[in-house]
Image (cartoon, helix red, strand yellow):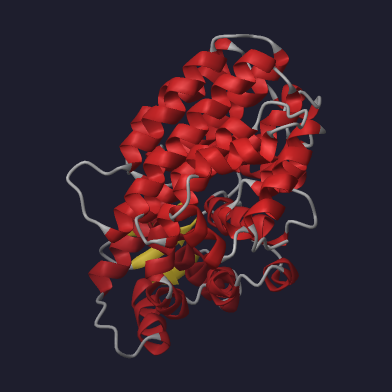
Length: 401
């Protein structure tokens, strides 16, 4: 619902607060529900007095005091003063944290989540519009971190719910700041101090959205550490527990899961890629499956910017060697699975697939040597005769082995 009148909006907030309706409040504490004209009204009126006049004679619970900084932020946004809006929104977030601390009521959790996310998004907008030596995102993460320390040191279930949500927001901030090392205390909190396991996340103690988000973010951190097995485990949890209706979120998870699975030698079905419209992977996976290194490199170049932005480009670039492994295997099959293959023949077939390539026989030998070293091909190279001698027992072992 889009509000255009001050009284209608304030009445809605008052009623939602009185009924302790966290879902309604989450919607109302959103700048999207305020018309542009209403934002300008808040920028030019005495917000505090308007709130007092609205609450007079009514039994109002606890939330209206958060309205003043929030509505001041809305006014600043309407006037394109994003940095001032950030300052006011931060005040609203801090007040919301204090309110939850005092009341410890679950209906406030969604409101806390909304304000924390809004703080991060406003910081992102400020930093995008104005280049700063010290990004304002640092101020956002500090405000969120202060509240995390307040809730993260307590083992009570309700407070752990808030702590996990705040931990997620901090991890997102640190990833955007390209400072993932700062995430370690947050993952230590989950892993060591509270020993959070998949059973804890599925027990209902934590909000499903927070549990899924945590697993997705943790997988991204494992990716940065090149720990692909753990990344795959956390992404699998996130994908399985993400609601079927959240198609966009499931697609985002898959956009990270597919490169990880490929690195582990697991190729996704074409139907899955089509269902979630992952076009950037369709030809890439086909090229990998059939050993078409030319197509693979074309697709990698085509979507390079997207893959770099996700942080998966290096994984996919390393898979080029596996594409060559499948190319060599294809030659082996075409030659009747002979145990000896001419390296000169392999070079000519390589040049036939990619005529523009100036690859020579030494480069082919180098590729084969790398694959033999990594265990992707079992055999050895007879340099003097320029022959690849393959093992008679599974010369091309499964990548999963």
